[in-house]
Image (cartoon, rainbow, N blue to C red):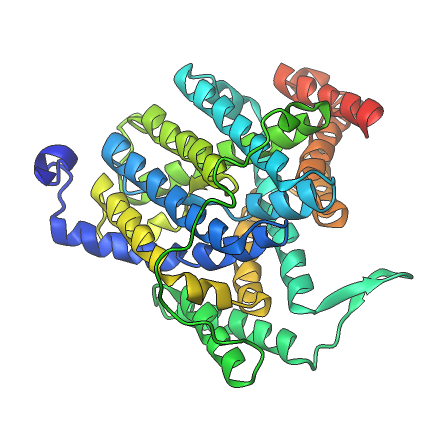
Length: 430
């Protein structure tokens, strides 16, 4: 049955290889079951319910990707978008988390439509590559700022806005230790470095009295506090347009980039360089996002950590199915997830931020028409505490730089349209 469904022989793999690859991928991305509930809890959501929603949304995405698209790519609620959900949409813009879930829902629906009608290629190809790298790097800096804040490295100051916190306190010291532990383990090629760091720092916190023991395993908690709590009508407000667009935009490019990166690593691309069954793969991502919004979690997306499983031999959707099963088994570890303190997840957040900054090497810094918009994105995202604002300012800056440089003809209609839309949004809706 497995051979018929996943075509293991045709992909030069085996059941054993796929299982090992699935376990490897899960270990590299399991940190999300600890970080996502903690982050969305800051938005006022029930932490235990979000834990269940995170595991279920990830499992649904993995199963669709595995059984329908037959790719060794795992999915889970995405880093960066969960921060945008909590710290921008809810805490900064003042929307309820129910409305924010409605925004996630609509972004998923639009993503499904784009996937069904093949509009996604036009969007992806029409957006300048420099802006894509800039957005990823900007989100990385945004996550780094959150990590420093959660760890106590930076605190608010009425005169300078932010300043150095008490770095002799246990929390920032343990957060830094967690980061260095991840780097050391990753450099040694140890899978699950992020999860090991989270558990190790939490254990130290227990020993020194900074964490209260709540147990390791139990029956899964109820998801009812977040299940079907999304506010669809509230998400239809004009002010939510940029929010829905940000959810969609980041997920679209994050997913597309991840799919190509994993496919290249596993030699799964066609001879012409295209990705077979791309529509099915994107449909898995968008469907999981819709399901996740109904369960009670932020945008679900494909994880680039899937490359670890591909490196371990994963070549088919069976790898993704194994990851999905492991996420379901994780439901029984909710007490452990509830114990994880903010300082234990700050190191991993900073580590993810570093990985997201890597794309800046592809920017032509000697070309101001590329450098300035990217710099605008990277600076405004963390300083305005908003991914949506960073994206908007980036598009506006890109269009204006090209126009004032006499390069109007190099602009495509999609960039001009989006830049104009963002200008109107700021002019009339703030």
